[in-house]
Image 1: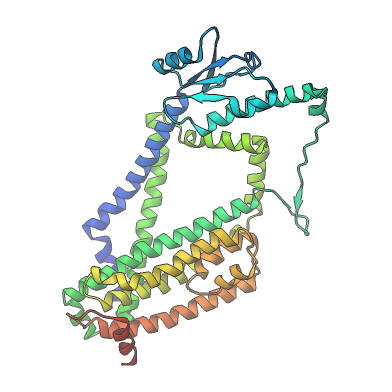
Image 2 (image 1 turned 135 degrees about the horizontal axis):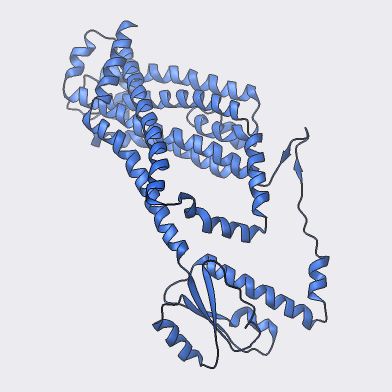
Length: 436
């Protein structure tokens, strides 16, 4: 055990003292914050722009119908032909020209209106224009049929179904999306951590193998201890780096926007407005539903299980990465072994996003939440939807049992492959090593 602690310390210090590790530790969060700040700044510039749309209404029906907004201004033009209006709009700096021809019937408005612009117009702007036209046309259609449009609007009832569990807990329509977002973020974080630091472990093994340092180490330390030391030491270095990233990003995210006067929330304002227009839901109600769903999430259960599944999943995959590093002589030789490792992770992500949200307690979701290669991702996505504790514990037991088996399996490959040089390993060769 003393050897194991020394190896862990050695691996950890080698990683954190490495110049490239130090540079990326401090440079990565700076780049991320710079990108977010740039996007927010560009979005703020875009939102401050007032787009002018010229309207040539030959029907005269919509002359006083369009209303200006913070970012959209309508300019009604009259007494000109369509060709002259198009030419003038193209020469000017206006956003585009909306042409409404004179029609013989109201129904013809559905496919006779044209919007002219230099490039493809914004989806949100076109949606706003179409909604405004549809509102007016529908009123005209009702009046043509001899109906009172205002009366029909008053008599119209909007149904908003209340959602509640059998135990009396209120939920909302946003619940499934928020639960998937929390679970998806946890699963994706695990996925990225495995890929980034698993590769780091693999490269470390390859470097020591090619430099022949491993021949000295293996003479005094058992292969399984050397393997575990590399996994734990690199993991601690990864946690250190991740912690520094979070701290730097939080500090920079709070300082940089205030220095440059950038509102980072502006980047999402247009999407939020489009969402409100599509759903017809009041923003205050949406905010209330969001907080209600967050309060309903099993946060304690989610955090605890995230730590266990994160540790179990990472350790299991890390041992496989170390085994691959021991089996090859260079990184170029690892490609044939990487696909079988990455495929279960990718499959877990797809099952989580496309199956769990539709039926989190269905057969497919449950089966993949017990398979150890996919359970760290799929189970983390299922937990926000309410998974019985016994299922979570059973999945963890299977996961850690598989980790122990994987370490044994990886150590078998490690102790033989670490001393093999000049010969490309194949699956057939690795099977032979397991018998030694």
